[in-house]
Image 1 (tube, rainbow, N blue to C red):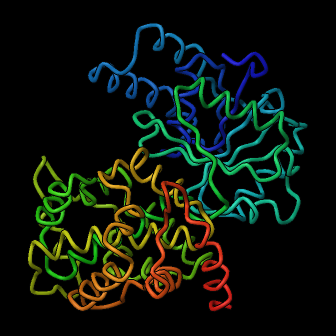
Image 2 (tube, rainbow, N blue to C red):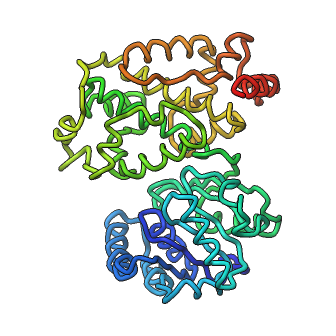
Length: 401
Protein backbone atom coordinates (compact mmCIF):
# COMPACT_ATOMS: atom_id res chain seq x y z
CA UNK A 1 0.00 0.00 0.00
CA UNK A 2 1.04 3.60 -0.57
CA UNK A 3 1.99 5.16 2.79
CA UNK A 4 0.57 8.56 1.89
CA UNK A 5 -2.87 7.07 1.17
CA UNK A 6 -4.54 5.82 4.33
CA UNK A 7 -8.14 6.15 3.19
CA UNK A 8 -9.73 6.56 -0.25
CA UNK A 9 -13.22 7.48 -1.29
CA UNK A 10 -15.50 6.76 -4.25
CA UNK A 11 -18.51 8.89 -5.13
CA UNK A 12 -21.15 7.20 -7.26
CA UNK A 13 -22.08 3.52 -7.20
CA UNK A 14 -23.00 2.88 -10.79
CA UNK A 15 -21.37 0.05 -12.74
CA UNK A 16 -17.99 1.76 -12.92
CA UNK A 17 -18.05 3.40 -9.50
CA UNK A 18 -18.92 0.22 -7.65
CA UNK A 19 -16.22 -1.81 -9.41
CA UNK A 20 -13.60 0.88 -8.80
CA UNK A 21 -14.49 0.95 -5.10
CA UNK A 22 -14.41 -2.86 -4.96
CA UNK A 23 -10.95 -2.83 -6.55
CA UNK A 24 -9.62 -0.29 -4.05
CA UNK A 25 -10.91 -2.37 -1.13
CA UNK A 26 -9.71 -5.63 -2.69
CA UNK A 27 -6.19 -4.23 -2.76
CA UNK A 28 -6.34 -3.37 0.94
CA UNK A 29 -7.29 0.32 0.96
CA UNK A 30 -9.96 1.45 3.45
CA UNK A 31 -12.60 2.67 0.99
CA UNK A 32 -15.47 4.98 1.83
CA UNK A 33 -18.31 4.97 -0.70
CA UNK A 34 -21.22 7.34 -1.09
CA UNK A 35 -24.15 7.71 -3.47
CA UNK A 36 -27.14 10.02 -3.20
CA UNK A 37 -29.36 7.06 -4.11
CA UNK A 38 -30.59 5.29 -0.98
CA UNK A 39 -31.19 2.12 -3.02
CA UNK A 40 -27.56 2.09 -4.18
CA UNK A 41 -26.32 2.43 -0.61
CA UNK A 42 -28.69 -0.22 0.71
CA UNK A 43 -27.62 -2.65 -2.03
CA UNK A 44 -23.90 -2.22 -1.34
CA UNK A 45 -23.45 -5.40 0.73
CA UNK A 46 -25.54 -7.49 -1.66
CA UNK A 47 -23.53 -6.29 -4.68
CA UNK A 48 -20.30 -6.82 -2.76
CA UNK A 49 -21.17 -10.43 -1.96
CA UNK A 50 -22.40 -11.15 -5.50
CA UNK A 51 -19.16 -9.79 -6.94
CA UNK A 52 -17.10 -11.87 -4.52
CA UNK A 53 -18.96 -15.02 -5.56
CA UNK A 54 -18.52 -14.23 -9.25
CA UNK A 55 -14.79 -13.68 -8.83
CA UNK A 56 -14.42 -16.83 -6.71
CA UNK A 57 -15.95 -18.95 -9.47
CA UNK A 58 -13.33 -17.57 -11.87
CA UNK A 59 -10.45 -17.90 -9.39
CA UNK A 60 -9.82 -14.15 -9.54
CA UNK A 61 -9.91 -13.33 -5.83
CA UNK A 62 -8.07 -14.81 -2.85
CA UNK A 63 -9.41 -15.45 0.64
CA UNK A 64 -7.22 -12.63 1.94
CA UNK A 65 -8.69 -10.26 -0.64
CA UNK A 66 -12.22 -11.37 0.24
CA UNK A 67 -11.62 -10.49 3.87
CA UNK A 68 -10.09 -7.20 2.79
CA UNK A 69 -13.17 -6.26 0.75
CA UNK A 70 -15.54 -7.17 3.60
CA UNK A 71 -13.49 -5.12 6.04
CA UNK A 72 -12.45 -2.19 3.85
CA UNK A 73 -15.52 -1.39 1.70
CA UNK A 74 -17.50 0.94 3.95
CA UNK A 75 -20.65 2.96 3.28
CA UNK A 76 -20.23 6.58 4.31
CA UNK A 77 -23.15 8.04 6.25
CA UNK A 78 -22.79 11.32 4.40
CA UNK A 79 -20.59 13.11 1.88
CA UNK A 80 -18.85 14.93 4.73
CA UNK A 81 -17.05 11.73 5.73
CA UNK A 82 -15.02 12.00 2.52
CA UNK A 83 -13.08 14.90 4.09
CA UNK A 84 -10.78 12.37 5.79
CA UNK A 85 -9.74 10.65 2.54
CA UNK A 86 -6.36 11.27 0.90
CA UNK A 87 -7.77 10.53 -2.55
CA UNK A 88 -11.32 10.53 -3.84
CA UNK A 89 -12.52 9.15 -7.17
CA UNK A 90 -15.74 10.63 -8.52
CA UNK A 91 -17.72 8.27 -10.77
CA UNK A 92 -21.17 9.85 -11.05
CA UNK A 93 -23.21 10.37 -14.22
CA UNK A 94 -21.43 11.37 -17.45
CA UNK A 95 -22.55 14.98 -17.11
CA UNK A 96 -20.20 17.89 -16.62
CA UNK A 97 -22.87 19.84 -14.74
CA UNK A 98 -23.48 17.02 -12.25
CA UNK A 99 -19.78 16.29 -11.78
CA UNK A 100 -18.93 19.93 -11.09
CA UNK A 101 -21.75 20.14 -8.57
CA UNK A 102 -20.23 17.15 -6.76
CA UNK A 103 -16.82 18.85 -6.72
CA UNK A 104 -18.29 21.95 -5.09
CA UNK A 105 -20.08 19.94 -2.41
CA UNK A 106 -16.98 17.82 -1.78
CA UNK A 107 -14.87 20.91 -1.32
CA UNK A 108 -17.39 22.28 1.18
CA UNK A 109 -16.79 19.20 3.36
CA UNK A 110 -13.18 20.30 3.83
CA UNK A 111 -11.69 17.69 1.52
CA UNK A 112 -8.27 18.86 0.29
CA UNK A 113 -6.77 15.67 -1.15
CA UNK A 114 -6.25 14.44 -4.70
CA UNK A 115 -9.50 14.30 -6.68
CA UNK A 116 -9.80 12.10 -9.74
CA UNK A 117 -12.84 11.90 -11.95
CA UNK A 118 -13.51 8.69 -13.82
CA UNK A 119 -14.99 9.72 -17.14
CA UNK A 120 -15.38 8.12 -20.55
CA UNK A 121 -15.82 11.24 -22.64
CA UNK A 122 -15.51 14.55 -20.77
CA UNK A 123 -12.31 16.57 -20.97
CA UNK A 124 -10.34 17.63 -17.93
CA UNK A 125 -10.38 21.24 -19.08
CA UNK A 126 -14.17 21.34 -19.27
CA UNK A 127 -14.51 20.02 -15.73
CA UNK A 128 -12.35 22.77 -14.24
CA UNK A 129 -13.51 25.73 -16.32
CA UNK A 130 -15.39 27.30 -13.40
CA UNK A 131 -12.80 26.62 -10.70
CA UNK A 132 -14.78 23.96 -8.82
CA UNK A 133 -11.59 22.26 -7.61
CA UNK A 134 -7.90 23.28 -7.54
CA UNK A 135 -6.15 22.46 -10.80
CA UNK A 136 -3.02 21.29 -8.98
CA UNK A 137 -4.93 18.51 -7.17
CA UNK A 138 -7.09 17.18 -9.99
CA UNK A 139 -6.70 14.54 -12.72
CA UNK A 140 -9.05 12.62 -14.97
CA UNK A 141 -8.84 8.85 -15.23
CA UNK A 142 -10.48 6.28 -17.45
CA UNK A 143 -10.60 2.75 -16.05
CA UNK A 144 -11.37 0.25 -18.77
CA UNK A 145 -14.63 -1.69 -18.51
CA UNK A 146 -14.86 -4.23 -16.91
CA UNK A 147 -12.72 -2.64 -14.18
CA UNK A 148 -11.99 -5.87 -12.30
CA UNK A 149 -10.67 -7.69 -15.36
CA UNK A 150 -8.68 -5.08 -17.26
CA UNK A 151 -5.37 -3.49 -16.31
CA UNK A 152 -5.00 -0.30 -18.33
CA UNK A 153 -6.03 3.11 -16.99
CA UNK A 154 -5.77 6.28 -19.08
CA UNK A 155 -4.75 9.37 -17.11
CA UNK A 156 -4.90 13.04 -18.11
CA UNK A 157 -2.46 14.87 -15.87
CA UNK A 158 -3.12 18.47 -16.82
CA UNK A 159 -1.94 20.87 -14.11
CA UNK A 160 -1.80 18.48 -11.16
CA UNK A 161 1.38 19.09 -9.18
CA UNK A 162 4.30 16.67 -9.18
CA UNK A 163 3.50 15.32 -5.72
CA UNK A 164 -0.15 14.61 -6.51
CA UNK A 165 0.69 13.06 -9.86
CA UNK A 166 3.37 10.81 -8.36
CA UNK A 167 0.93 9.70 -5.66
CA UNK A 168 -1.81 8.94 -8.19
CA UNK A 169 0.44 6.96 -10.52
CA UNK A 170 1.99 4.99 -7.64
CA UNK A 171 -1.50 4.24 -6.33
CA UNK A 172 -2.70 2.93 -9.70
CA UNK A 173 0.39 0.76 -10.06
CA UNK A 174 -0.14 -0.58 -6.53
CA UNK A 175 -3.65 -1.58 -7.61
CA UNK A 176 -2.04 -3.79 -10.27
CA UNK A 177 -3.04 -1.42 -13.06
CA UNK A 178 -1.05 0.01 -15.96
CA UNK A 179 -1.54 3.79 -16.04
CA UNK A 180 -0.67 5.62 -19.23
CA UNK A 181 -0.75 9.40 -19.64
CA UNK A 182 -2.85 10.67 -22.54
CA UNK A 183 -3.80 14.03 -24.01
CA UNK A 184 -6.95 15.86 -22.90
CA UNK A 185 -9.19 14.57 -25.70
CA UNK A 186 -12.88 13.75 -25.34
CA UNK A 187 -13.02 9.95 -25.31
CA UNK A 188 -9.34 9.58 -24.43
CA UNK A 189 -7.59 7.23 -26.88
CA UNK A 190 -9.59 4.11 -26.09
CA UNK A 191 -13.08 5.45 -26.74
CA UNK A 192 -11.85 7.57 -29.65
CA UNK A 193 -11.24 4.26 -31.40
CA UNK A 194 -13.70 1.97 -29.65
CA UNK A 195 -16.83 4.11 -30.06
CA UNK A 196 -16.30 4.41 -33.83
CA UNK A 197 -15.89 0.63 -33.90
CA UNK A 198 -19.05 0.10 -31.80
CA UNK A 199 -21.17 2.42 -33.95
CA UNK A 200 -19.88 0.70 -37.08
CA UNK A 201 -21.06 -2.65 -35.70
CA UNK A 202 -24.58 -1.23 -35.25
CA UNK A 203 -24.52 0.29 -38.71
CA UNK A 204 -23.63 -3.10 -40.14
CA UNK A 205 -26.70 -4.57 -38.41
CA UNK A 206 -28.82 -1.79 -39.90
CA UNK A 207 -27.37 -2.63 -43.30
CA UNK A 208 -28.68 -6.18 -42.97
CA UNK A 209 -25.84 -8.12 -41.35
CA UNK A 210 -26.69 -10.60 -38.59
CA UNK A 211 -25.37 -10.40 -35.03
CA UNK A 212 -23.35 -13.58 -35.46
CA UNK A 213 -21.95 -12.41 -38.80
CA UNK A 214 -20.66 -9.12 -37.35
CA UNK A 215 -19.10 -10.74 -34.29
CA UNK A 216 -17.86 -13.60 -36.46
CA UNK A 217 -16.06 -11.15 -38.73
CA UNK A 218 -14.43 -9.54 -35.68
CA UNK A 219 -13.32 -12.93 -34.38
CA UNK A 220 -11.78 -13.78 -37.75
CA UNK A 221 -9.82 -10.54 -37.42
CA UNK A 222 -8.91 -11.60 -33.85
CA UNK A 223 -10.54 -8.40 -32.60
CA UNK A 224 -13.02 -7.69 -29.85
CA UNK A 225 -16.50 -8.95 -30.90
CA UNK A 226 -18.40 -5.64 -30.69
CA UNK A 227 -21.99 -6.81 -30.28
CA UNK A 228 -21.07 -9.39 -27.64
CA UNK A 229 -19.24 -6.56 -25.86
CA UNK A 230 -22.35 -4.36 -25.91
CA UNK A 231 -23.84 -6.66 -23.27
CA UNK A 232 -21.22 -5.45 -20.78
CA UNK A 233 -20.87 -1.89 -22.13
CA UNK A 234 -24.67 -1.32 -22.13
CA UNK A 235 -26.20 0.62 -25.07
CA UNK A 236 -27.32 3.43 -22.76
CA UNK A 237 -23.72 4.04 -21.71
CA UNK A 238 -22.52 3.98 -25.32
CA UNK A 239 -25.33 6.41 -26.16
CA UNK A 240 -24.20 8.81 -23.43
CA UNK A 241 -20.52 8.54 -24.35
CA UNK A 242 -21.04 9.06 -28.08
CA UNK A 243 -23.36 12.00 -27.41
CA UNK A 244 -20.78 13.77 -25.25
CA UNK A 245 -17.97 12.99 -27.68
CA UNK A 246 -20.04 14.41 -30.53
CA UNK A 247 -20.67 17.59 -28.55
CA UNK A 248 -16.94 18.06 -28.01
CA UNK A 249 -15.66 16.83 -31.37
CA UNK A 250 -18.43 17.10 -33.94
CA UNK A 251 -17.78 13.64 -35.42
CA UNK A 252 -21.13 12.97 -37.11
CA UNK A 253 -20.56 9.23 -37.47
CA UNK A 254 -20.74 8.84 -33.68
CA UNK A 255 -24.42 9.76 -33.84
CA UNK A 256 -25.29 8.06 -37.11
CA UNK A 257 -27.00 4.93 -35.74
CA UNK A 258 -30.75 5.21 -35.14
CA UNK A 259 -30.60 1.73 -33.60
CA UNK A 260 -28.35 2.95 -30.76
CA UNK A 261 -30.94 5.44 -29.51
CA UNK A 262 -33.60 2.72 -29.57
CA UNK A 263 -31.42 0.22 -27.73
CA UNK A 264 -30.51 2.79 -25.08
CA UNK A 265 -34.14 2.99 -23.90
CA UNK A 266 -34.21 -0.55 -22.49
CA UNK A 267 -30.69 -2.02 -22.86
CA UNK A 268 -31.69 -5.37 -24.40
CA UNK A 269 -28.99 -8.02 -24.59
CA UNK A 270 -27.53 -9.01 -27.95
CA UNK A 271 -27.13 -12.55 -26.63
CA UNK A 272 -29.64 -14.53 -24.59
CA UNK A 273 -28.52 -17.92 -23.34
CA UNK A 274 -25.38 -17.65 -25.50
CA UNK A 275 -27.52 -17.28 -28.62
CA UNK A 276 -28.12 -14.10 -30.67
CA UNK A 277 -31.23 -12.25 -29.56
CA UNK A 278 -33.54 -12.25 -32.59
CA UNK A 279 -35.65 -9.47 -31.04
CA UNK A 280 -32.85 -6.99 -31.79
CA UNK A 281 -33.74 -7.11 -35.50
CA UNK A 282 -37.29 -5.94 -34.73
CA UNK A 283 -35.85 -2.72 -33.30
CA UNK A 284 -34.21 -1.72 -36.59
CA UNK A 285 -36.36 0.83 -38.43
CA UNK A 286 -35.30 -0.09 -41.95
CA UNK A 287 -32.97 -3.03 -42.45
CA UNK A 288 -30.77 -3.43 -45.51
CA UNK A 289 -30.34 -6.52 -47.64
CA UNK A 290 -27.06 -7.60 -46.08
CA UNK A 291 -23.36 -7.38 -46.82
CA UNK A 292 -20.64 -9.65 -48.09
CA UNK A 293 -18.48 -11.15 -45.29
CA UNK A 294 -15.40 -9.48 -46.75
CA UNK A 295 -17.13 -6.09 -46.47
CA UNK A 296 -17.95 -6.73 -42.82
CA UNK A 297 -14.28 -7.25 -42.07
CA UNK A 298 -13.20 -4.28 -44.17
CA UNK A 299 -15.75 -2.04 -42.42
CA UNK A 300 -14.63 -3.06 -38.94
CA UNK A 301 -10.93 -2.68 -39.79
CA UNK A 302 -11.48 0.66 -41.47
CA UNK A 303 -13.44 2.02 -38.50
CA UNK A 304 -10.49 1.18 -36.20
CA UNK A 305 -7.98 2.83 -38.53
CA UNK A 306 -10.08 5.95 -39.08
CA UNK A 307 -10.72 6.27 -35.34
CA UNK A 308 -7.00 5.98 -34.65
CA UNK A 309 -6.06 8.56 -37.30
CA UNK A 310 -8.69 10.96 -35.98
CA UNK A 311 -7.21 10.64 -32.48
CA UNK A 312 -3.81 11.75 -33.77
CA UNK A 313 -5.52 14.61 -35.59
CA UNK A 314 -6.92 15.70 -32.22
CA UNK A 315 -3.41 15.88 -30.78
CA UNK A 316 -2.43 12.48 -29.43
CA UNK A 317 0.94 10.84 -30.13
CA UNK A 318 0.87 8.06 -32.76
CA UNK A 319 2.91 5.88 -30.41
CA UNK A 320 0.35 6.27 -27.62
CA UNK A 321 -2.55 5.53 -29.97
CA UNK A 322 -0.98 2.31 -31.24
CA UNK A 323 0.09 1.23 -27.75
CA UNK A 324 -3.37 1.63 -26.24
CA UNK A 325 -5.02 0.05 -29.28
CA UNK A 326 -2.96 -3.12 -28.95
CA UNK A 327 -2.16 -3.34 -25.23
CA UNK A 328 -5.39 -1.86 -23.87
CA UNK A 329 -8.07 -2.63 -26.47
CA UNK A 330 -6.31 -5.82 -27.56
CA UNK A 331 -6.64 -5.21 -31.28
CA UNK A 332 -4.21 -7.61 -33.01
CA UNK A 333 -2.60 -4.94 -35.18
CA UNK A 334 -1.41 -1.43 -34.38
CA UNK A 335 -3.81 0.64 -36.55
CA UNK A 336 -1.47 3.52 -37.41
CA UNK A 337 1.37 1.17 -38.27
CA UNK A 338 -1.12 -0.69 -40.47
CA UNK A 339 -2.02 2.55 -42.23
CA UNK A 340 1.68 3.17 -42.84
CA UNK A 341 2.02 -0.31 -44.32
CA UNK A 342 -0.96 0.10 -46.61
CA UNK A 343 -0.46 3.77 -47.41
CA UNK A 344 -2.84 6.56 -46.41
CA UNK A 345 -4.35 6.66 -49.89
CA UNK A 346 -5.25 2.97 -49.76
CA UNK A 347 -7.04 3.45 -46.45
CA UNK A 348 -8.98 6.38 -47.88
CA UNK A 349 -10.01 4.16 -50.78
CA UNK A 350 -11.15 1.48 -48.31
CA UNK A 351 -13.16 4.14 -46.51
CA UNK A 352 -14.89 5.11 -49.75
CA UNK A 353 -15.82 1.45 -50.38
CA UNK A 354 -17.27 1.11 -46.89
CA UNK A 355 -19.25 4.34 -47.18
CA UNK A 356 -20.65 3.22 -50.54
CA UNK A 357 -21.72 -0.14 -49.11
CA UNK A 358 -23.48 1.13 -45.98
CA UNK A 359 -26.58 3.35 -46.36
CA UNK A 360 -26.98 6.44 -44.20
CA UNK A 361 -24.44 8.71 -42.52
CA UNK A 362 -20.88 8.37 -43.75
CA UNK A 363 -17.66 7.98 -41.82
CA UNK A 364 -15.64 11.08 -42.57
CA UNK A 365 -11.99 10.96 -43.57
CA UNK A 366 -9.77 12.86 -41.10
CA UNK A 367 -8.23 15.92 -42.74
CA UNK A 368 -4.88 14.73 -41.46
CA UNK A 369 -5.15 11.43 -43.33
CA UNK A 370 -6.11 13.22 -46.53
CA UNK A 371 -3.08 15.50 -46.17
CA UNK A 372 -0.84 12.51 -45.48
CA UNK A 373 -2.03 10.81 -48.65
CA UNK A 374 -1.29 13.94 -50.66
CA UNK A 375 2.20 14.39 -49.17
CA UNK A 376 2.87 10.63 -48.95
CA UNK A 377 3.69 10.90 -45.27
CA UNK A 378 3.52 8.15 -42.66
CA UNK A 379 2.73 8.25 -38.94
CA UNK A 380 6.11 6.73 -38.09
CA UNK A 381 9.58 7.24 -39.51
CA UNK A 382 12.57 5.13 -38.47
CA UNK A 383 10.50 3.62 -35.68
CA UNK A 384 9.56 6.98 -34.16
CA UNK A 385 6.54 9.30 -34.58
CA UNK A 386 7.09 11.24 -37.80
CA UNK A 387 7.81 14.88 -36.98
CA UNK A 388 6.49 15.92 -40.39
CA UNK A 389 3.01 15.09 -39.06
CA UNK A 390 3.19 18.14 -36.78
CA UNK A 391 3.10 20.52 -39.74
CA UNK A 392 0.19 18.57 -41.23
CA UNK A 393 -1.65 18.77 -37.92
CA UNK A 394 -1.34 22.53 -37.95
CA UNK A 395 -2.60 22.58 -41.52
CA UNK A 396 -5.62 20.36 -40.78
CA UNK A 397 -6.47 22.45 -37.70
CA UNK A 398 -6.31 25.62 -39.79
CA UNK A 399 -8.55 24.02 -42.44
CA UNK A 400 -11.18 23.14 -39.78
CA UNK A 401 -11.27 26.73 -38.53
